[in-house]
Image (cartoon, rainbow, N blue to C red):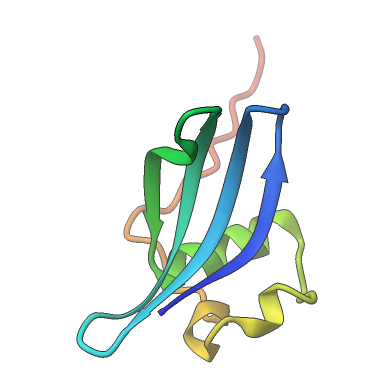
Length: 96
């Protein structure tokens, strides 16, 4: 099952779709789809980025989102941030 969470238009012939994809065997994921419009075809997907629940949670955290109308439709696992495998290290250097 697919649920369109939001549509972000960038022009009359370009848009981004944020879609929740739920399957019985593979679980849930969010897809960001870049779409174009053609008079003969209609809207069609040019490219897709798959976001796992931890990635969506990290993105929400980075954007400072605490929830919203569209995000409240996401399953609970999309609000849990997993620790990253790589953590940046802050290095201080004294100037000469």
